[in-house]
Amino acid sequence: MVHWTAEEKQLITGVWGRVNVEECGAEALARLLIVYPWTQRFFDNFGNLSSPTAIIGNPKVRAHGKKVLTSFGEAVKNLDNLKGTYSKLSELHCEKLHVDPENFRLLGDILVVVLAAHFGKDFTPACQATWQKLVGLVAHALARKYH
Amino acid sequence: MLTAEDKKLIQQTWGKLGGAEEEIGAEALWRMFHSYPPTKTYFPHFDLSPGSEQIRSHGRKVVAALGNAIKNLDNLSQALSELSNLHAYNLRVDPPRFSLQFLSQCLQVALATRLGKDYSPEVHSAVDKFMSAVASVLAEKYR
Image (cartoon, rainbow over all chains, first blue to last red; front, side, top):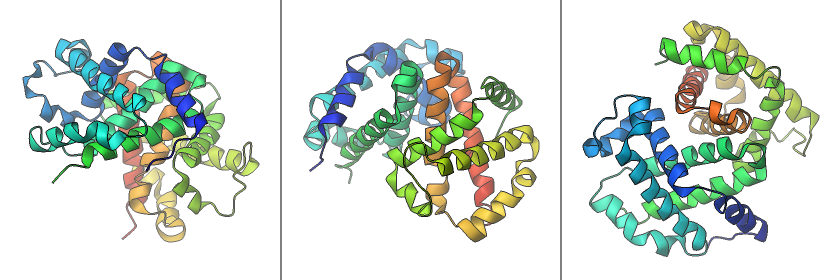
């Protein structure tokens, strides 16, 4: 059972309330595909991923980024039940999508960097620590149903 | 690994810091201890409280080493050779942890909070690759 202090919950909801899910999601997914190009292996049908510019401008990347981050919003709403929240998605990523769970950790770290660039000094060390904890737990919940 | 473009971006980015490098070193360490408490096990002899002079001083050392590496991107192995020995034989920081992922992540967050939009995806990629290359060199002599 994960324990969240009142301060951690504040740091999470406070940041999330100021996030533009569509922009941030698109940014995070684009950076994943740029910084860790091997992750492109999961997106063969996304069209042009040939350069950072192409990736950033790719409408499928934007749309999917939004989808992914919207799902992340579920974690924020269900901090006390991440396992339950991601149970079905975990099965999906294992059985249909065949995604190595290591990729969840990579995306989590990228999301933290995107938040840092966006919030500047407001993204304090305490804030980062809380968000690293959250992305780590989400990654863990997504990996849980793998077999 | 590091393309000519990556090297250019890294040097440009480091150049943009305008003297804040030392502060960034201490901040990156502080963030690392906060986000990844097990990393503190390597510093039992340090005062790890906020504003600790030991953290500031160590941050300066780390940043100086990175700055030196950035001046010698074409020959990282040689530039970091002493540090490589130190980490392998004396410090013996656990290699996976030492894949510097934690320090790299925290350094990048420290850079991103300062550079905002200038911490573009291309710069992000170059810095990530650079830290990965530094980690490889430092781990070269482990066994």
